[in-house]
Length: 315
Image (cartoon, rainbow, N blue to C red; front, side, top):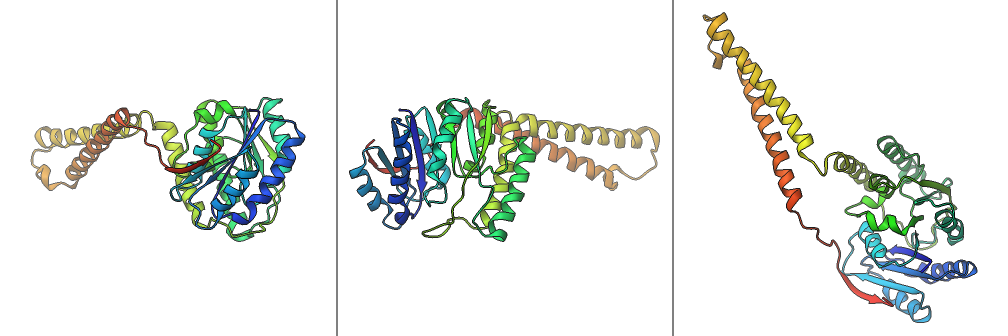
């Protein structure tokens, strides 16, 4: 299989047939063996009915249906697992991504040997205040913390080398940070391509302003997990040890001062410095214990699949 096009969707019944026709028309000109994988992420409309009709007439189209809405990260994860192409391209199902971008994205991965090519919606047809401005702030924060010079981390249209998608694991809302996950996994050849962004024709956006708040929290989580996820003791244990040492030295000083220097001074328990030292040692012990427990949990955790597939077509 040369190419897999993975498309997560939620309540997009009106756009699916047109999207598949456009993708098929573009890819057939490239004379590639291809597959289109549609992942229905718990749609409440007739999206699955449309998918059944599409797959009955086009055997290059495969489909997965989730039991309920698990989120885009889980939909992409299932699509990646089902894909067989040497190059995998992801697109949104709302017709805002242009299938005519596929040939160049495929070439960049296949011939230029990029690990990942991310789209950049340089000219957006979204609300300026609710999407464009928050998106710019979000992308600035992602660039600053990751060191990856991309203008649009969360663009839906991307192209991947097959090896890359086999190595990254998407949980929560981490689909926003696939380039960061790729870099952390050791895939450094990451490029960006300006892509056409069309106005939405059908339905309405599935994302509100709250996704940017969640996105920033996910960014902090990703940074922390990358730095200390495999060795939580390096973070919590270090802080705990430093606090314990500070508290112990402070307590020692108070004891020496009372016993040998200023013997007529107040009792140690009447001095506020004693309680500061005691609190520091207690907090240090808690940090150290948190790191220790984190290590135990990490070494004994079991990876659980985060979605349930109820139906498959052409798999």
